[in-house]
Structure formats: C-alpha cells, structure tokens
Length: 393
Image (cartoon, rainbow, N blue to C red; front, side):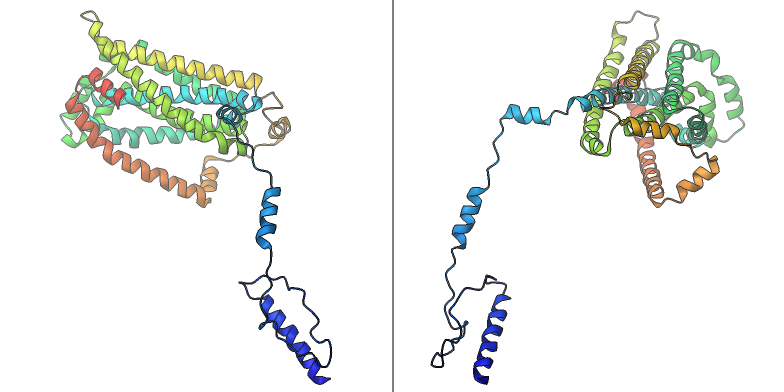
C-alpha cells in the first residue's frame, strides 16, 4: 500500500515538473490511470512518447476565422486622410495665418540685415551690439507690457493691440522715415563724437548714427518673437485639442517652409525691378516700398483670418468646447508682478532647460552670422544685390 502511494506521488511530481518545461506544451494529455491493479507496472510519463497534438491545425483554423482587412484603393486612402469638416474649419484658417506670419517674417529678416549691414559707416559687427543693448531691453520691456495687457484685456484684444502697431510702423518706415533719413540721421553729430573716442566705439556709434535702421531691426526681430512665437501659438493652443495638435502641428511646419520659398522669390523679384526704373529714382527706396507693402498686405490678411476665426470658429461648439471657454472667462487670472513671474519661471526645471537651449542657439547663431554677413557685404555692397542674394538664400 505504501509503495502504491509512493509511486502515485512520484508520477504526479513528474507530470508537474514536465508541465513547467518551457519548450513543451502545458496541456497534460489524458492517459490511463496510473495503477489499475496489483499486476500493473508503473510507467513514468517521461519514458512514454509524447502524444501528437494537432496544434498546427487548430492555429490554421483560428487564423482562417480572423477576417482579413479590406484593401483600400488610392482614392479611399486619400479620402480617409482628409480631416473632418469641423477640424478643417479651424485648421485651414490657422495654416493660412501661419503662412502670412512667416511670409512677413522672411521679408523682414532679409530687409533688416540689408538696412543695417549696408548702412553708412556700419557693418555686420553692429549686429551683436543691437541684439545686446537694444533688442534685449526691448524684449524685457515688451514682456512687462504683455503681462499688463493680459491682465486687463482678453486674448482677442491682446492680439489686435500687439499686431496692428507693427504694421503701422513698417508702413510708416517705408513711406515717411526712409525717404527722410538724410535729415533724421545725425551723421555730423556722431562724427564729432567719434573723433574723441577710440576706434572700438565705432559699432555702438553706428547704432546712433543709423537709429531708424536700428529701430527697424528691433521691430523685425520682435515680429518673429511676438507674433510668430507668442501670439500665434498661444491662439493655436486655445483652438486645437491635444490630439489635433499631435496630428496637424507638423503640417504647420511644412507650410512654414512653403512660406519661406514664396517670400524669398518675392524678395528676389522686387530686387530685380531696379533695372526698369527711371534715372534719379532710388532703387532701394522703391524696393523697400514694395517689400513693406507686401508685409502690410500679409499682416492685413492675418488679422482678417483671425477675426474670421473669432466670429465663426470660436463660437462653434463643433470646433471649440464652449464649456471650457466659459470656464476660462469665469476663472480669475492670477496677477503676478514681473519679479514674481521671473521667480515662477526660474523654479521650473523644464523652462530653465528651454531657456538654456535658446541661449545656446542664439550664441551659436551670433558667432556664425557676424563673419558670414561681413563677407556678404564685401561681395554685395549694393542693398538691392544684397537683398537679391538673401531672397535666393
């Protein structure tokens, strides 16, 4: 009796051990009872041949039951990739807004370099001084102003307040300021001061000498920082959801490249118009009017698209969640001073890393662009030739 119990336990242990072998199936085959009678000899399951399973047949049957995906034609694939109507209603105006903003920025970026680098007694060495002593304080001042505007007005009015002065300045510069730079720029006064200062002060004095060009340079830089980076993306984040942003924000980047191509070719075309001008007409002054006219037109189209979205998209429940918009309006804004805002930003490691990234990028750009633009001035001293090269570049 004890021998039978021992053999039964041994058989169960062997079966259990066999079940945990990874290379074998965990299903234990049905076999005859271990002990049928006293004369029955015990046979270990390890010594018996493994039963043949029909797993391949079962797997093939299961695979046959799974329905195969229906193949789509090329037209069906294109149709399925088109966004639904409620998404198209807001994505198309957003993409056109971004196109207009970057179209303007490319024209302004090329024009500001032409004005400052080819100005009298100026050059590419002036650029670091403008960015440090003029552009940086202006950016800090605008940050404080923008904070005040956001506390006092809603986002829609802040957009109008920030963009319209840019367009007014660019139009005034082309039509009023540039034609009268001879009377506005204090060349004689700066020459008298330069005679008493060392030669190293020539670059800062060039900013004073050509102060209207320096103001244009800063306003062009601020267009990229304020309108393109701040105002547009804050509005885009307000209109789109997180899932929509993952799908469509990369397409905005593709649209940006298209805008750069169009604006570059426009700059090249405008610079080539000097060949047909009558004698006595300033070719660069005429080119500047065409360029700033395109900037004002692009800015007007941007404002028109923004106004359209405020009337037809922001009020459509299919496009924007109205409950969230109502909660945002009811929610009280936390008012912080400029010092408190700076402390809040410094406390965030994510923002600190982004700031380090931007500072490193700016340093690399400044190291390269000064020497490169100095060579460009030597190759293209004429403003129109310089502008044509930048349009191709």
